[in-house]
Amino acid sequence: MKIISKKISRRNFIKAAFTTGIALGGGLIVGCGEEKPSFPSNLKVNFVRQIITKDSTNSRCVMWQTDSPMTEPILELISNGVTEKIPVTDSTFNDDNNENIQYTAQIENLKPNSEYEFKIVDGEKSSETFTLKTYDEKKFKGIIFPDSQSADYDVWGEVAQAAFKQNPDAEFFLNMGDIVDNGEDRAQWEAWMVRVEDQLKKIPFAPVMGNHECYSRDWQERYPIAYLNYFAVPANDDKYFDRRYYSFDLGAAHFVVLDSQWLELDAFAPGVVEAQKKWLQEDLLSTKKTWKIICVHRDVLQYKINGRADWLEGFSNVGVEFMPEFDYWNVDVVFTAHLHTYRNRGHIRNFHDDPTGPLYILTGVSGDVRYPGLWVNHTLDKVVAPQPETDNFLTIEGDEKNLLIKSFLPNGKLLDEIKLTK
Ligand SMILES: [Fe+2]
Ligand SMILES: [Fe+2]
Image 1: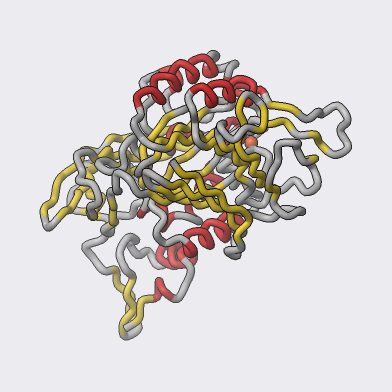
Image 2 (image 1 turned 120 degrees about the vertical axis):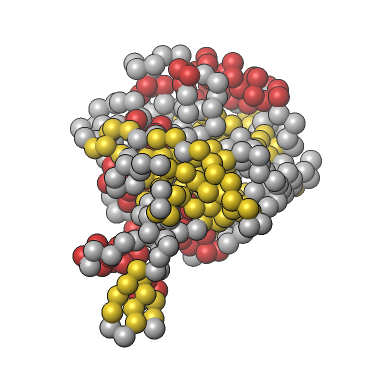
């Protein structure tokens, strides 16, 4: 007896299963030259993913796709041998000339620091069993990936898998936006997801929207339909900008994810800058968490570009609009992206180097789109990744006293390390 799924890649496994007409979901077992599926796991579900919720100590959102509509979809949550049926919402959407059959389950009232199992069920059919963990109210650890947009998503897969292998204790992962190169292209979303499908199943994902989520196949600006439908992030109580910005708690940290795409999206829905400033006030006033951490795709600084005399050093429109807000609300850390380079600018307040201000980290690149030799170092840059730049990822961990941020090359070499204490 041998399990052939261990000997071939997931993609070839799926291909083999399709060509032999075998149901997917469970183990495929080969014995004495015959192939048969191992029931009862006989429901094929694709891209099962846990999405971050407001509070990961007691809730989780689970989403998945199917090839054909489910008739009686239910999520079965299993804890200590007791099964609870969680209602499922049909969240199917149309984009890229495709119907994307999709379902969403919101699981509430979980216990902190607990392990659960869940299955997706449709009548007599059931998926394989997945695991779900809830987290501590204080300690936390996660991985932050910069722009993963790629021509070949194998690069993203290699960076991501190296990060997960080196950090098996990561409790969540976050992508800083420009998750894909073209936000309308369904094949790119699937290419991105398939390379982290084992992690999406297991730990919650927190997405940030980038400008590339807002482009059509013919590179026109468009509303980020796929992004907003693929990830049912926590509500911001503003239906007009639903899912475009949000916040969540993880351990001792309060994370805020902002939308910096008003250049692309104001033509479709104006006013996101003012809406976010108002919401940010309410959101940051109400949190009691030790660490206030902002994640926003576009960087706050403006860099000189080699060979472009008209492009001056300064602050971007995101910086001009939001850095005074971050100062006022005593934000601890601001993570940005978009420029595909890793830079630690230290603490900035009132647009100047100041140890009392928020720490600003430009997170780098985790796909294959790189800009070698493009940026001229900014006066505020403290640490710059070795040039020409390859890829990197970051880890963030902490508790009520300490916050540790590290940036790594995929081979595990440490690029930068910052420790904050309260
Ligand atoms: Fe990008
Ligand atoms: Fe970008």
